[in-house]
Image (tube, rainbow, N blue to C red; front, side):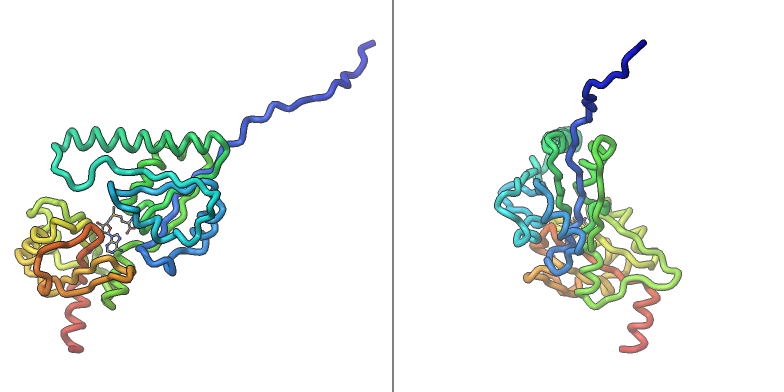
Length: 261
Ligand SMILES: C[S@@+](CC[C@H](N)C(=O)[O-])C[C@H]1O[C@@H](n2cnc3c(N)ncnc32)[C@H](O)[C@@H]1O
């Protein structure tokens, strides 16, 4: 008769990977961090952040008071910023950079460490985090923590509602060709123009061509101590930083404004 097998059983468990968090840190002021963002950042073993060359990184600056000395900081430094590079070469450089950044984050996840990848504003609204997300989210447990976007902070800073009622609201990158900017601006609906920086003169020209420069408001570094808000017609056209945008309220709001002035 067969004896029951009493030998000790050893379960073969898959090694536990770390978790990936894409964390929106808001527009800059630490007061605009969500409670969930604070909890995730405080608990992560690794905090990863994107940064331009020779710059400390805005997202890290926002959360630096939360960091613990034992946390690992992964600085993911863009190989290029505003240098003029042919589009093909740029695409290749930046693709390689995102692939290498994803591999660096994956090494921590494979070692069982949770990684919080910081993202200015919201991670899925023009955020670099999404380039890691598409490469890693299918392989590791992943959570995205939404954040306050730059345009929300900018309209709050300007005290200017952006869109109402049945108006459409369009987001335009300021790097678009002149014709595309003008065409959208002529529609009369609410528009926010992101990625202003050195494109400010071209954006101002497009606003003028669409007859909307008198309504447009320029906001620089919304929610930072050095924030600036001014009608675009008061800007001398020089020196707009990357962290600036232009708000153009919908015509319905502009009309109400004119009635109550
Ligand atoms: C790559 S996008 C990132 C957007 C971000 N993920 C968000 O949710 O707002 C960068 C652009 O956002 C805008 N931006 C980000 N932070 C800003 C701030 N504090 N003030 C004004 N514009 C800001 C600028 O137009 C900048 O060129």
